[in-house]
Length: 625
Ligand SMILES: [Zn+2]
Image (cartoon, rainbow, N blue to C red; front, side, top):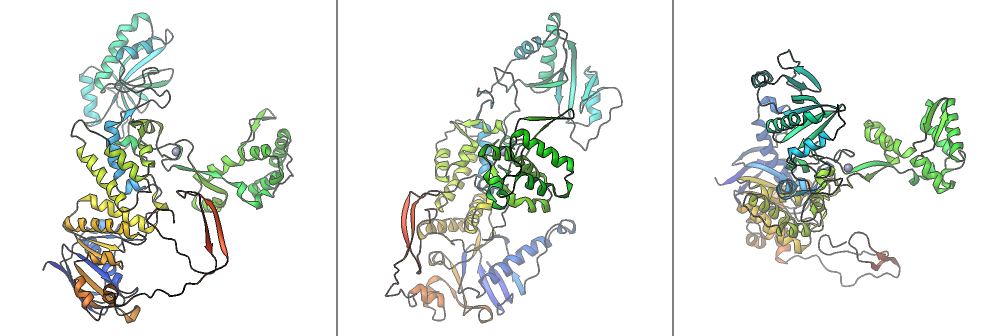
């Protein structure tokens, strides 16, 4: 009973198979394409595992998950919690990166929150603590008779009613709720379901030399009540002070640095111009010959469609005249500076019936549209706009403060942009004074080491999920599982070695063994002889594809498979069967010449590729093929 026992599996082409998959071992399904390997591994064993899992949920939860169809099988005993790591990359979310997929970024955030030194994004000064005297001096510099309120930001830890009573007892009179001031003993409208901004009014005074002592007392009280923070309200504006964390020369305060500061998927950390995506939309009209052949006037008419009034078109013509642009000249024939104005606008104003009108250019209009448009409009616009790296955050997805927290001159985005092998070196060079972060650091090292060891050293943590190949995605998911320390699970993997060079393959295999040694059961669909070699148990499917397959031709250890005369795979593994290498190779007299190729990591390569015959490019993963 130390096995997953499958009785009469008939999914797809499976011919009523009885199979036993040992717990805590690596089992490999091999055999010709279409012979039924995936039907057993994914569509029977994994599917049933998932189905039982969702079945165990409450009816309420079940309505939110996709129900799996029951696979065609008589019975499965000894099934474990199942996790599939497939090739299919449905990780199309532009918000996930290698860093978030492997959780390496989460550990980096913790590391930067603890060890990072924050610098002011505006002045470059180190952000540090400031004194109450400093705040007092700044406020005393305001013109005499300026009205100032000193407020203490409050966090609601009890019910609002209890807070009111407590503050009244402590002798306070007024509170500001979402911008409006109320007497504490009055009826105060309060909606506990929304996020409320609560500020306790400490004092209201007028700037004057004799008010200095009272002002200092107010600052002191506020800072004590609100963990070293306070708000000074004057000239209809709030100025926030964080005594523990401010810029000495300007007094500008920042919220404390926490792991959230670096989270580009939340308000705390995201770049506001691209909402943490790292890219924006920009118009790329120059790419389209059809558009470039149009005149500014014709293009305007096309864009406005039926909405253009005579007045609007007249205004456009006047504007072009003012700017010195010929509205009837095709865009491609316009001087560069005129084309630039059409795309990016101009500062020149046209006075019209008392209004000042300025031409903003088409670029910003398109980008704005693409950002906010409905999906159908987006689709229509997509040929005219390009994704461009967000100029504000330079593609780092983070807000200015997050980008200016550094460990040894490196910001978190600098580390994420490094190739993974260099990122690993950076992390390994970090020394810790206390042991608080030992676990964080070792988790990070573990993940980076694994990614590098399976030949992904050419990638970086900031690579976004949609740009990865299926094989890369699967190996990255594997990195996450290895770090999760789950035990007693069944992992079902689909050709984990696909696209890997044999050199990297050995490293991947040792990782698979490690996953198994953690107390898990592995079920692999695989052809690669090296990986078949690490199997404790092999199921060799055959004899052919489709309805001619669905049987298990041989089962057992590698040695048993090799000896089994019925096994096609065994015959290849033992060398009895071979893919014949042709004695004579074809040649060609015509060549495709490539000179000085230097895309990505190519080192100015010049080569000839023969035409009309087959050429093969090979080498380790990421070497430039
Ligand atoms: Zn941005």
